[in-house]
Image (cartoon, rainbow, N blue to C red; front, side):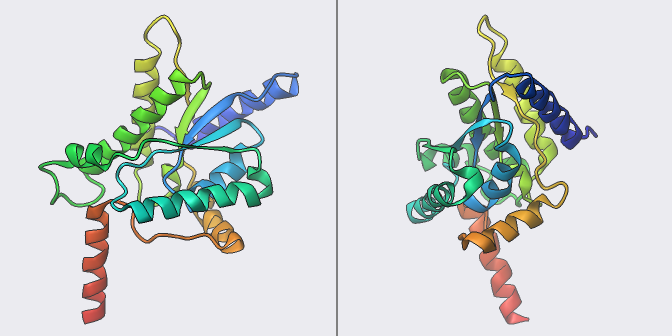
Length: 222
């Protein structure tokens, strides 16, 4: 298995050396699922990149939940000192794209092939936006969660980098990510407490909510 965190550290080290020699920070489009997951990622990355957070999540089941997560992200980037220069970009909210992708696989368990394709749906849109708008790098905050498969996320990102860079115009570079490493998830919890961030207890999709409710019901019965 590839050590993606080590590859990530190597990318940051190369960027640091270029900046120290007078180079500008490269631009990064960072797909974000929510504010708590973004918090530590932004803390780690702000010294290396000119960051734009891309809130693209057609998987979120309700507009109210979607807006709540987006509003928290916007608030955080105005309050956290290390995130004050971060720009927030809202992608299209089209849940029908997620349901079309998930059709026929509604009863599959979480962390299976439906989740893989959900990762791919969001990362593809991120990569395409990054290329269309001239970003140097693209990545995602999803790998900070212990419930997300970092190996899948990196495999998809690498695949998209190759695909979008295969024509005359070179596409954006994928920034490897496994942000849960070195207590990254724990740090995101600490930042959530420090800034009073809303922490949801499901990934956002209707299937995750369904499984959460089943577990709650079983727990209450016990």
